[in-house]
Amino acid sequence: MLPTIAILGRPNVGKSSLFNRLVGRKIAIVDDTPGVTRDRKEGETRIGGRKVRLLDTAGLEEAPPETIQGRMRASSEAAVREADLVLFVVDARSGLTPGDRAFATWLRRQAVPVLLVANKTEGRLGGQAALEAYELGLGDPIPVSAEHGDGMGGLHDAVREILPEEAPEEEEAGPDRPLRLAIIGRPNAGKSTLLNALLGEERMITGPEPGLTRDSVAVEWIDSTGGKVRLVDTAGLRKKARIEQALEKMSAAASIAALKECEVAVLVLDALLGMEEQELRLARLAEREGRAVVIALNKWDAVEDRAAARKRLEDVLTASLAQLKGIAVVPLSAQTGRGVEKLMPAVRAAYALWNRRIPTGELNRWFEAMLSRHAPPLVDGRRIKLRYATMPKARPPTLVVFGTRAEDLPEDYRRYLVNGFREAFDMPGVPVRLQARGTSNPYAEAEG
Image 1 (spheres, rainbow, N blue to C red):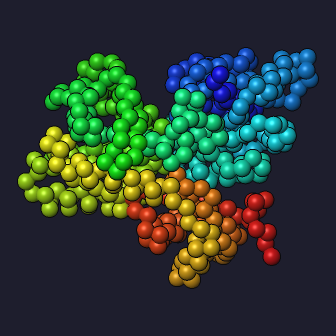
Image 2: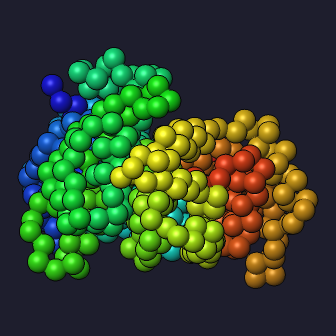
């Protein structure tokens, strides 16, 4: 029997948009008018690598039982009783309402795990808007934009941690579980040739024509380090593309889908072309989804001036991809196999960093040294006093700093902390999240 996930929340917070996004097609009608969804809708999909039954419920509203709104609420409550997990959705853009708080209190009393999803957090300050949701007492809010697809990787990860492994895969739980790998890049960069080289067999059709990979692929193998690897589906080019632009759009869509399910992404570059805007977009997307990234610099055997090619790539990475500072670059030739043996060790190293946790004591000794070296600046003439830091999760490494007016930390000081963290704990090339919580947060240390 498939595990059941119910999406709950008050009307017009984006439940149906999230349902459609997770199912991968438009089943639920989406509109700005509150209350469009009156009946429960359901669909089967994969979230966090698990096949699940997903329920889109009507909006939770305080209303007498005999009214339409009352019956909608009763239907939603029934969905909770049969759910293995609830996604409670709030609108981070408009802020919390009394209804959000009332239903959060009710959900805390239910015998079902709840993930708090802060929707509509697109934009530079989107994550900041999600912090208010801590007030609901349902744990860390997961910032997403159901409309734009932002943050879905974090949601997939959170679901994966709560739901049990699928029965056929029980033997894979624990250290023996396959590393979930995505191979992404522009059409004709050599992704399928690279996969064949990793497997040691001609599993994928290859050729000079871009877009040969059209059907879903599910490949598992034992890599050169002796560990299991599962390739996440990077196909998706299922329609004939008449123009290059349309082909690139479909390729990007396939890469987005793969990044939501993977743990490490190998970004394949054509060494003759270098890193252009499309590859930068894919790398930024991988960072935004919180994935570890390794660059495979393919067709290296065809490069004449290798020093100049490396310098060009390093300049682009420094100027345009600072959030993945120190990313591993593996020059190779998928066609000849030269250098391919170095790729999976680099992937495993990135994966280990992505999973790494720093003990709280060690983290705070570093944090105090950073504050001593460079104190937080004044903001609007007022002092920001940071007290301590924690690392509540890895995958990717996530820091939370607490203090008076911590939420007002300027962006350049956040970068100072993130860069210092990378350097001190030798964590190059993986995304690092930093959240700041002021002491108005009920979970933060009270001011003395």
